[in-house]
Structures are given as C-alpha cells and as structure tokens.
Image (cartoon, rainbow, N blue to C red; front, side):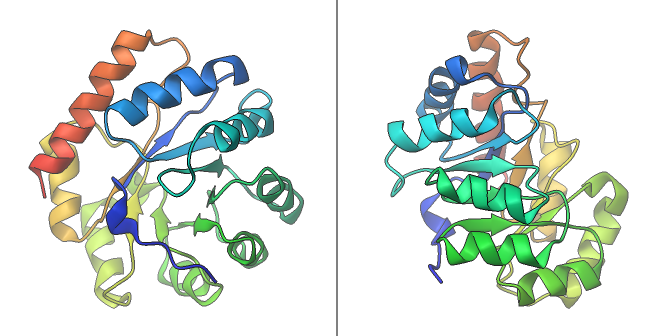
Length: 210
C-alpha cells in the first residue's frame, strides 16, 4: 500500500459539500492558491463523481489530494477510485471501503468516534482517522481516545471547527494533526471573495497554532 507523507500537505481537508461540477475547478483553485492541498467532494453533492473527475484531470496528484467524502458503501468506493481520485473520506467505519480505497492507492480517512472503531479502522489500513462528529467526543473525549491510539496515528477532528484559535488550538495541543473543514469554509451560497477570506483565516490560525 502506498504510504502518504502528510508532512507535504497542509492537513486541512476542504469539504465542498453541495458544489456543482461547473464550479469545482474555480473553487478548488481559489483554495489551492491559499495553500490548501486536500479537496473533498462529498458524494451527496450534485454529480459529485463528475466534479471529482474534473479535479483529477486538472490537478497534479503528486501535489494535491482530491477525492470523495461521505463514501459509505463498497459500490461507492469503487466508483470513486475509478475516477482516479487519491483521497477517500467516510463518515463511518467500514473496513471494506477502507480496503478498496487503500488497494487503489488512495489516502483513506474513515470517520470514527470510539476506540473500537478507531482500532478496527487502523487494522483495515486507514491512512488516518477522521474524528466525527468531534462535537460528540468533545476535547476531553478526543484526548482520551488519542491516549490509547498508536502515537503516529494522524487524527483530524471534523464537525463544527471554526477559523479561531479557541476552536482549533486546543485540539492541536491535544494531538490533532489537522482538521476537516465544512460549512465554515465553504457553502454554495458564498461568494468567491468570502471563500478566500475564510480560507486565509483557517490557514493563518492553523499555522499560528503549530
């Protein structure tokens, strides 16, 4: 299985839920210009696989991780890897989805909340863990989970993260390597200018909290 050097990436996954194929390259380029290198199109977005195909064709996948979120079934996982994507993100722990993604050379971040889910995901070959919804865990729950995981496990809280030190720094100090960023970074109703401002804010707070 391909091992991904996450140190080459800004570990902030841009979750572009609701994006349309005609907007994907423009928005992804705006984010890339601000330093983002990980772009996720949730499969419950309009014609998500077409958006992912466009990302794969447009960007150098040695520099960018692009792919799908909300991947919950083996069928969906196979459809995603068929696009040439190199990133698979799930809201749940499905060992078969993880194995399909990893066998195709994708980085896979499954959603987990409990130690059982976390260890099963790692046993299936997960690249890292998406702690989702982190609001259910809370900071204390996050710390407790990390205390039993292998020290090198990349963990990314997702759900309700804002571009503020109060939101991000405590999780980073506890051991988070990065975050998945959803509606606080992108909503289809936002203007390009708003998205750029949000992106700059997230990158600035993240780097300032390292």
